[in-house]
Structure formats: C-alpha cells, structure tokens
Length: 93
Image (cartoon, rainbow, N blue to C red; front, side, top):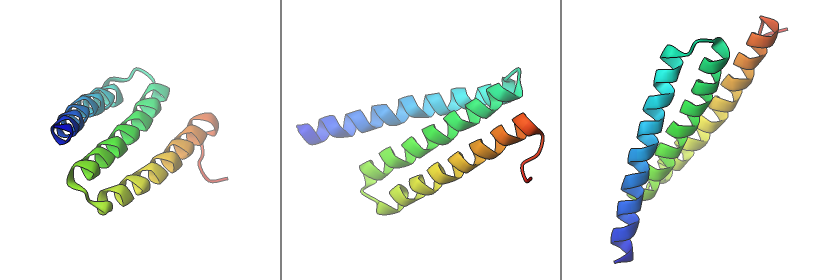
C-alpha cells in the first residue's frame, strides 16, 4: 500500500514540476526585461534539477542524482555570470 502511495506521489510531483518548468520556459521567451529572463532561467535550472532527483527516486538510479548535482552547480555559475553581466556589462574583469 505505501509503495503505491509513493509511486503516485512521485508521479504527481513529476507532473507538477514539469508544468512549472514549462511556465519558466514561457517566462524566458516572453519576459519583458532581462532580469525577468535571468530569474526564469534560475527557476528552470531548479525545476530541471528537481525533475532529475524525482526521476532518480522513481528509477533508483544514482546517475540521475549526480546529474542533478552538476545541473545545480552549472545553474549557480550561470546565474552569477548573468547577474554580473547585467550589473556591469562584462563578465570577465
């Protein structure tokens, strides 16, 4: 019984987070300002990382957890670089 509940909960979480990723993608395309697009990109990285984690839980795959860690690090670096670019107009000093 609890295995069935866990499977349903993980499937529901995947669906909801996939919808959130689609909404973040639409904000990237339709965002009125560059700051909105950077924030949406940060949200997209987070939702994709969560999708990898939930899929790893469903499949029992360690590889997806490692991929989620790589996505988290790359998302952080990209957010810092884009923010620095928006503030100063250059990334490398």
